[in-house]
Length: 138
Image (spheres, rainbow, N blue to C red):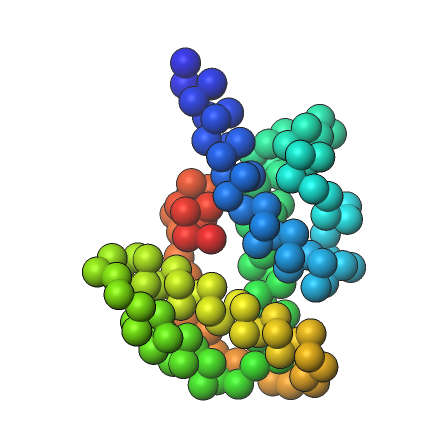
């Protein structure tokens, strides 16, 4: 039962992470080991176990976010936090996740609009104790 439950969690993690991973890898095509594929294709791959794929995606996302830091100013973190706080939500974790999403979206738009790379901007510190925590944060 525990093996089946773990497989279900990994499948759900892939479903939840795919859109973010795919978009970031499309923006940095030289980063992933393999070009990003559709969710259906990624879920049916047999060349790598699901837990390794989820770990790889989390690392790819973190690397892409690190690269995006060079396309935005330091002021983007507080601006994203203010925008997230303006949304009507009492859940602090949801507000933090929304802030991260705003930051990533704005950084991607800056990069795609031709912003030149500069010094790395500040970002909020992110911590996760395990794979499940990292997936939940992302």
